[in-house]
View 1 (cartoon, rainbow, N blue to C red):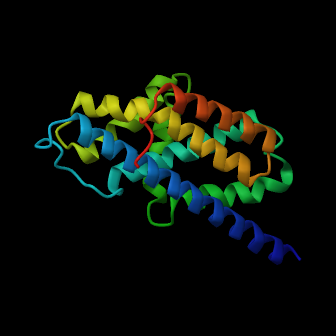
View 2: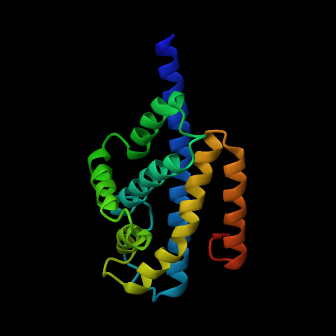
View 3: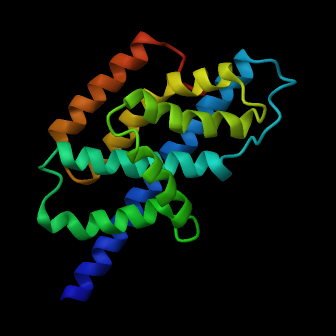
Length: 188
């Protein structure tokens, strides 16, 4: 019976990791669109497809968000979910990139008490992946979009653990943010 439970947990973790991968892809698409719209096209010479340090940074940040979210929302973090959580961290990190994601996660831990420091830690590699020359305007664009990424990631986690009151609260906050900045987080 334990083997069946383990397979069920692994399946659930990979399902959630797939949804988190879609959140990363959407985030990158929005960032790329906003950088293309707001910066000189001649300086946007980096990659147009999510990968490299940008993906490592976003996955590391999702692992951080997962750990922090579960610590703050105990209904999600029950003992029976521990194995799912372990599998989820592994699935988000990916087999090949796990050392780099873990290293980035540890870098985020250095900024534990500074949300701004964490966002900067994530925003710079994402922006530099698109605009390789280290452009402060690109960093700012990525930084402005980070609250959407955090809320999207938290909503996936709450939904997958069946914490509907938390999901509804996060959805309201997300909608409020989107209403405050219309068009900012749409790729339409």
